[in-house]
Length: 275
Image 1: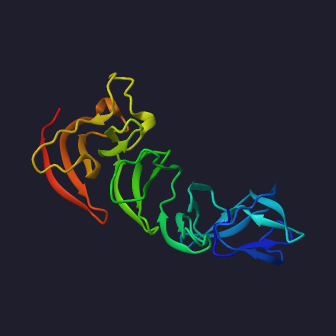
Image 2 (image 1 turned 120 degrees about the vertical axis):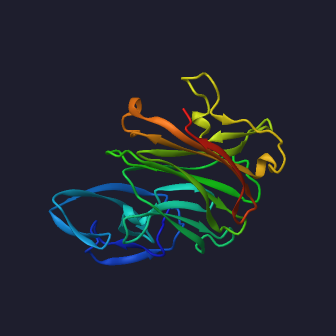
Image 3 (image 1 turned 180 degrees about the vertical axis):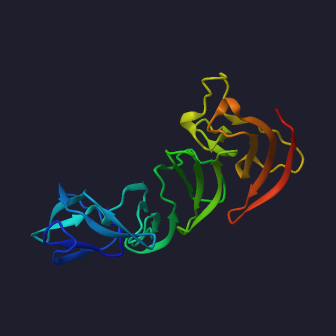
């Protein structure tokens, strides 16, 4: 799928070659042939600074458009189609990723966009079992660092009926603290569970033999489960980079209610000195 406002078609696999055509966004390129181009050392701009790449490769695609052979640069195409008119790809001229939502009737009209941090690695998905009300769907984006400190973040993004994107909340894992978001997932049986970080693939804890879920009880002032998000924050003495030296010293459990626009805090429970 084309991703930029204009995805240029070049006469050869190089951005320095002549542009012979352009394609609108959110267009399926059905017939193509992959091309790998190696190039010599060159300077690039990244985050406002100049960096030199000694040797690298670029991925291109040879296509035939309107009877004419041309070439598309990989960075002009979406990395992943998340759902219908929701695409994920690289943000032009920035070292960031981006989500684009398109109009249901006119696929070339961008309804909304959102920048995402770019890290050492990522996983992004459309939550097929989203149980949260007041939104058409939810995107789950997990990014992480592979080097020390090995931090990570899991972000939940809502998509409403008009295609607007909004960050609901996020969990994190750092050196001396972390958090877990218990997100409502609705299964085919109709049952809804609050699942740790919305990760249905990791719902079973093989170490403890229990489910990675939060027990929902109809307490006073706690909203219906399909409007409820629970966050557990933990602090540690020592560093989580060395788990055997890290001791949990504080924990807070925070209850939120989602109304489709914002996340409202209901109450917080917890204490210090937890072990």
